[in-house]
Amino acid sequence: MSSISPQAVLAAPPQVPTDDIREFLRGAECVVKEVILGTHERIDFSRSHLIVIVVGETLAFAAAQTRLWRAEMGDRSIPILWLLPFSSPELTVTGLDAGADTCLARPLDPAVFAAQIRAMLRHQHCLTRLWSRAAEARQLNEQLQQAYHAMDQAYDLTRRVQRSLLPRRLPVMDGIRFAVHYRPRSRVGGDLYDVVRLDEYHVGFWLADVGGPGSPASGMLGLIVKHAIQMKEIHQGGYRLVPPDEVLTRVNRELLALELDPPALAGVICGQLDTRTGAVALARGGLPPTLYQTNAGTMETWNGPGSHLGAYEADFILQFGKIGPGERLLLFTDGAKLTQEPDPLPSIVNRHAQLTGQAFTDAVVHDLLQLVHNPDDLTLLVVEHEPHNLSASIA
Image (cartoon, rainbow, N blue to C red):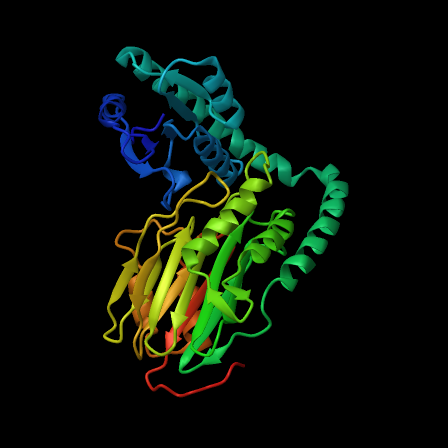
């Protein structure tokens, strides 16, 4: 094995103590990267050797997160260890079925835990070599052509469904402009977006990542998500603008009602903007935080908690902000997972600050993708307040 210390990802629910686990891992000569289950966190699987998931009270979400990470790894095999709050055959079966390689229960014996970590790292080292050889063999396997033909038909149908869910044009109203760069990794993308004029002074916008990248099921799930996103309720004699946190709650319940195994996880961010004042209300679940660029060129992150939708019943936090003339918001899906330090995104945005609209959006995505070797579906939605408040009607 390499002389470089292996990296262990330690994932735990909020407020669950992990001091002992962290020390055990360090005792096994691991470099520990801690993440919180239920929040967006970039994980570079190419640098990770082991994942330790501390199972709290929300067993279903731990299982869903395990399946999601297995899907994101692709052919790469990284051992996953579940730490159970107590010994239970039922919890052990759930963890193994979800994709964990082994399960240990607290209280832990330090010697047994260290031996288990060493065994899993040896296993991961062997699997990495096998994965490399299997990747070469797959390129020579001509028998997959018939299966590819059947998949092509399914992908074509899904692509047509998914494309029909995207808006043909974006509105322009009262000096507020929207621009989008939509880049699916393959013929079928899991990203969706829309911008809707709600009334004379309010506009709603949302961005979603449903299903896995290139998944034939993403089209059907996209239909469900788009149908559930209702930002305006019509009542007899009037209407009500639905706050973004309520919108996400409704989408979450629709996905949970499917009772799929594995769960239909989705990332969604939804916003509502008052064009008179520039006031913005946002709610986020499972997508990267929104970036805010001021007219002075500084960058801020509107970073609130937000778990994936479709995992479990959850409350979504409503955030408030404001964009003035010359300022803009940038909403991303997570197709470009940057691991560089410091984060290069602010410099990319400032590099093209003199651009506006679609030219700005395309330039940011172009530079961003230069730093990502294997990007997934990526969509950037930009909300821009023009420097001069020129009134415009919806396009």
